[in-house]
Length: 290
Image (cartoon, rainbow, N blue to C red; front, side, top):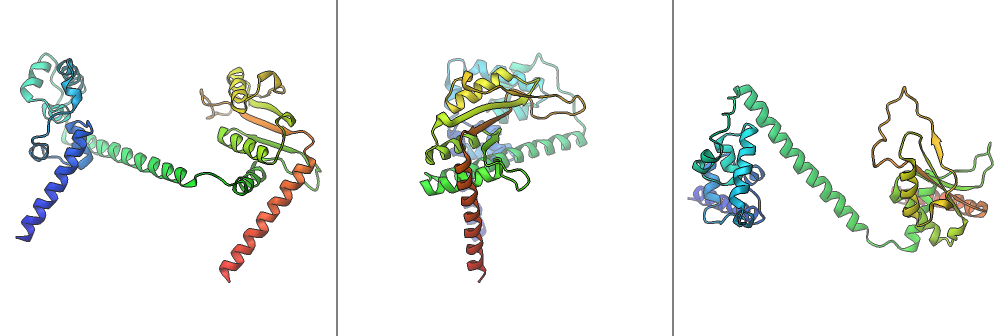
């Protein structure tokens, strides 16, 4: 009977997954949602013989379970839902929550909406896990940068975010402005690679006047490894009451400005290197197209 064999194989595979999740400390409800199992009898069969996680064996485990059961009951959970979540018997649950008000019976339409919302929350969790996995894999794939790689990255970084000389405004100055601490760290590593002495650098902060100015100055000073007194005067941006700013909160620290003294020769090297990159990329493209 090939069909029966396939069904048995599928069940055993699902049981292996359920046992692995249980041994990882997941609750019954978490396992149910993770594997999309909506039948308590099937879930019981999958977990048959597997002892509860270690956290349920703590001296106060019963008290913790009772408190959690009461919390869930107050949120409107049914006995079945609490049983799946905590792995307790219905008799225990009934004993623990019998003094609490019975949840209002939801209309079928409301139950459907709640179920849809639960599924969507689960889907968002999976998507976030996948997103973080992709980012972490990409980060690890970079590895150490060679001096040439760091040099090319730095040139591109500066040409995107640094000040540039214009035909109508001759300024061969090296000045870099950014709010991303990672960008600042890469830029400083690049300057070190080029042999630019840190004593030639001057820092200043640009930030909205109603932000935590002193906190931002401390943050940037610690990031670049210098004392706050060595910073130039902070530039305060006037607040426009007609605009709604989104760059607020503890994470907002304005921008850091880094200027290189006597940087005309360095600027010329940067500009020349950038156009060398453009030329190299163009040749590469032409070769691939040909």
